[in-house]
Length: 154
Image 1 (cartoon, rainbow, N blue to C red):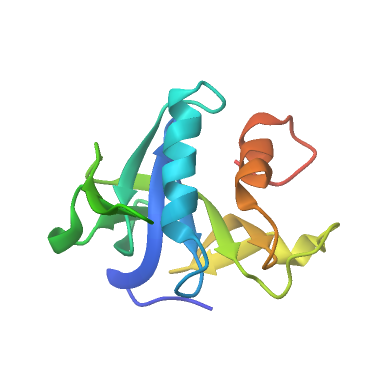
Image 2 (cartoon, rainbow, N blue to C red):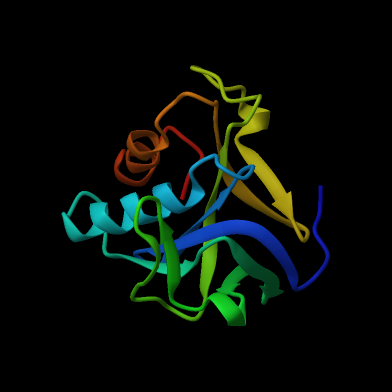
């Protein structure tokens, strides 16, 4: 499924190293929580340095064959921390998407089929991690970012 150019989507994004993780899922699935957990994992050295791109709504567009993500203007530098509310956070203005994480994905499996590990957004194929409801996504995303190839990610 493709999205229209420069689409605002219900998602969060975190730049980790030189690529962004785009986090999608229904309301309440834990997009903001995963975004903040990844930022904390970057601070702890579990993954390369991580910084918020956007939380709740982001804009997507294509630039020179790459999917780019940036925050919507009204939410720049803001992230929801459950139990605290909306907080200010260091952020970047844009990043190239290197991985899509789909929370509460019905096709999230213990041993996923290869065709579920890729998504096409605005005509660009991007590695995808489907995570079934009830599974904590943080450790799986860290594994994607830190383990050696054998997988199709980053």
